Image (cartoon, rainbow, N blue to C red):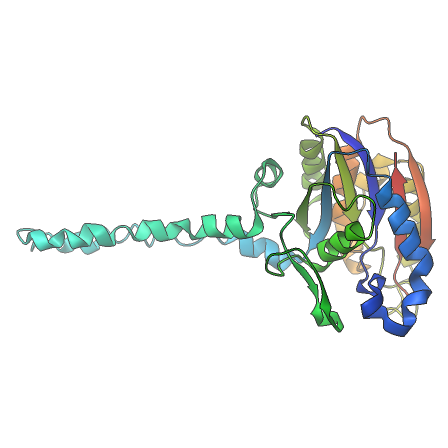
Length: 297
């Protein structure tokens, strides 16, 4: 899909006023910057929201192939019933062999997450359609949710969907893509290039926090390299230094608790060769977590 615009936003649940309650005004500037970036996506005909998800979930999807489907084939040994083959009643046994239909479970998994060319290109059913639900009940706001379906979206995508709903881009068709946090830089860049190959005019909403170790009051204790990491990313977004984004060290990002690393590297692949220029709209760490907002138009 030709990428016609992109927005980069963080995903703290506190962006939702009902979650932040009395602290909501503290993030007014961040919320406004996010909406400014997202509203620049309106020239697109479809929106792809990209965010990270836990690496454990990645292995969960690797499990489908592992469904030890081989055991099912071992059912043939069961056909040792041949001793009784004379009993045509053994015909039910073949019916039992319809167990392989149970193998359609992976398909059900794909249906739950939604399927698309993007998901197939990535090799996992980590895409969700616009109906996929997201809930903020775990953050104290059970009345706030998005989508008409079950709440299956990971936090990054739920916040992205909520932000879209507040913007002028709310009416555009959308798809969500969750990228496992342990995805390698090369895989992320490749995925970005796959996304950029198509005919639709796509706008990217890339969700990702910087380091969660920016101060003594951070969710995780201060790390001496956290600020430099976030500053490097901010500069790369401002000047569209895609090679810098693509070269971010996944091990360092994990150590710094920077959830945006994989989505930013997908962005690097998707923007390669486009004429879009970057504009950094927000850079701060109000709660000891780096929040960056950028727009590419």
